[in-house]
Amino acid sequence: MTIAAGLLATGCSANSVGGAADVTPTPPVPATGRDGLTQLPLSAYGTSDKDDDLLFRTEKALIVRCMKGQGHHSYAGRNMHRIEARTDEDKKAANPVGAWGYIGRATAGQRGFHVGLKMPTGGTGVSGRTAKDDEACSTEAKKQLPALTNTDGWKLTQTLYRQSLQVAVADRRVIAARERWSACMTTAGHPAQDPEKLAAGPWKTAKPTAGEIAAATAAESCTRSSDLAAIYFAALSGYQRRLIAAHVPALTDYQKRVRDLTDKATRLLAESPAI
Image (cartoon, rainbow, N blue to C red; front, side, top):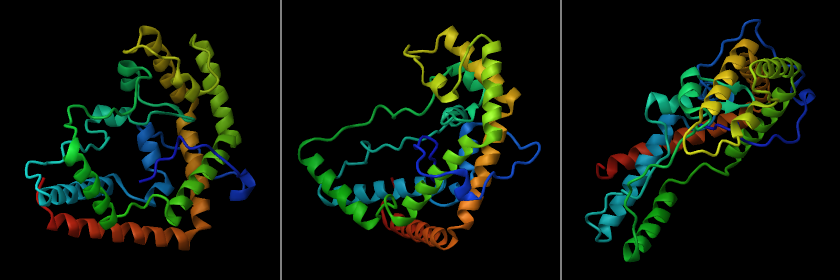
């Protein structure tokens, strides 16, 4: 699954995707920023959360099997981690901030702008011969299960995301919604022009302060009252559908490569020891 909200937009205008994308009169509001991103049309091209989990477990199993074959019989891959949202709360806070505003009342009230995923702790590092063998086994596992990153299909999806993001931000309906959001924030006592800049801080404290909670809560409320999130994701989806229509053969081929990779991962995992 490709989530590219943080990518810099380059080299595209509204005209390049056929003008303004359609937006329904009352577009639905994603429950969270993560939901909005994962439900975008382009997110269908690439690996899903389920696929990513399969690929991680398979690579880990291959490395464990290789390491045991090298004589490291107690090796269990505890030094390997996947950064992911496990709890419902973490899922809601995984990607809540972007050009669409701040989504999630509970997240705003509890975490403020202290959001995102953290690296798991408590893993066991490796050193010496174990580290050398671990590196060799990792290299071998990647040969058996090569990543799609930097393939032509992957690059195309990234390019199309960048293009859709740029035209969506420049869409007149999105601009109007952001102006409403900004006016609402000023009225609420937290003047701000840009949702992403507001979320970026400075919020340097270890835990969110009362002021940060207040600003985040105001941003969430203003996002709803301005319809910013609903309009933004509806416009972005419309632009992405047009871009997809112009690249069907290449995207279809990329989908096949994803299926081939996950099918291979399923076979390799079945041949590897349970972990």
